[in-house]
Image (tube, rainbow, N blue to C red):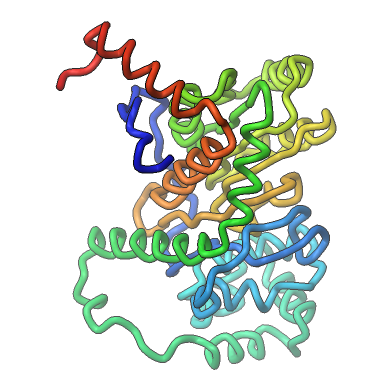
Length: 332
């Protein structure tokens, strides 16, 4: 349907995007990409989107391969998450610098290295340097900070394309979302704009989309209302800095019987343990506020997959186009 699906391509005003200040400085190529993991394999609680051919050569995915199969504590998952977000820089960080980056103690970094099978952090760092790519773009050093941010986003998008070489996780997510009536879509703070954008377009093809983009004491009530109305799945967009309320809401949604599909910046994000299917898409962290081109694009890919499982999607879009023309809704 992709070539025909043109209706409703406008973007309405929604919550302001961006990220929370202090979400992390620096940007690693492809940071936050996922590894193929089944339930219980690795630190996340749910399956994670698989890698495409060639994706294993990126710094982030060498880290994921290193972490895979290890049972990590919450503190160790926090260290792993920070390492993935700074994948290109990690081989050159001291244990003290990594501890500051992750917000943990220096001994915790040492214990983390030992948990991975190394004698200590120096041995882990030597290993990371040995497997780091030998070549680096000769032009990258001449880029200013704004160009570097753009280049980092391009790398994030390139890595997302590699991950999508295996379309099965996204297709599974599309089926889950299409079948849920209603479909609650959750995104708070930095992720509110991602949730709004998805919900805006999804409402053109799905009969009942419910946007949950404002936190507070009512959010559990809205989850309950969706469950009572027949919802079977919930889509969440989760971006740094991760609000505790999102983790709590996803745990509540799972307890209520919903299947949780999450788009997050990393397979080691705090929401992994409360997600049934996690689809990672890296954010850029080189500017004062994170950039989220890859999560936004992954949201549109999810829309495409959902439309493929909604037989009347094209008819709904054509109906919208006809009504928009009668109302003179858009300026041609």
